[in-house]
Length: 353
Ligand code: SF4
Image (cartoon, rainbow, N blue to C red; front, side, top):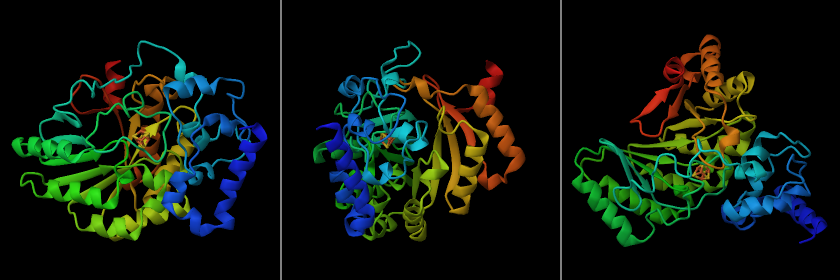
């Protein structure tokens, strides 16, 4: 596609928001019209990688951005916090021993395919290898799509049998990829099967859909989710501009059917490693009944090293927030460390350094 054609195509897609709101609000249309080539974006948005070789990056890490998420980008903004989370850059090819393809060795240490059982009382099920958007800072960016999940019925059944045999497991996190990329009926089947296991007391879903494809949170999905309790949803807003009317409405729909929504941000250099941005994010989340739960240090994953902020940044930010916001707007700043059980507070990590 020529540069001019790409540009016209993207402008046309974005214009759908005004010209055909019926299409814009259809999550399947959003998926079908997602941008899957970063080079297409260079003609529309000014970026620091204008001369970089995005094609080389995309041989390793694919691109997927919904029109909705694209519409949040301020045109011509080189350091736009939305653009930085979705556009490939040549920095992803920087090699450094500190950053590993799979820092938590999830793919290697699965109890069985698709089941990550690091803690005695809880485990993770990977039920989808697709996301509405490919976040450039994703922890699983090197292993997603490598058939590490539970996709066929018999694979899922084996996972349920495994959980049945692990009597200490009381909490199951349904993850992926993004579980909300599954058909509603399939997710219903997974939640129903887990609910039938006596010792599974709590289910959690990890999803970025409220942030990048909020129209997916439709009535059918909410009514289905409402049948499964106790169910908690964790999402990942990283910047206040992501809390749009659409995103707030999607979260509100979940909350109104009785599902608590908590937020787990990732501390991302150049995006939200600034106290004013983080304070605004936390207060906006709280105003919209979304609990600011955690701020994670960016995981040491290959291809995302350029997003890593120094630990001292998070520690200072947490201190400053403690002084300036109420407890309900105050997230815990933590890191997930390879070879350690559980999250570690950044303050504790800082004192060990
Ligand atoms: S939605 Fe989650 S799993 Fe998917 S790319 Fe983003 S961070 Fe990774």
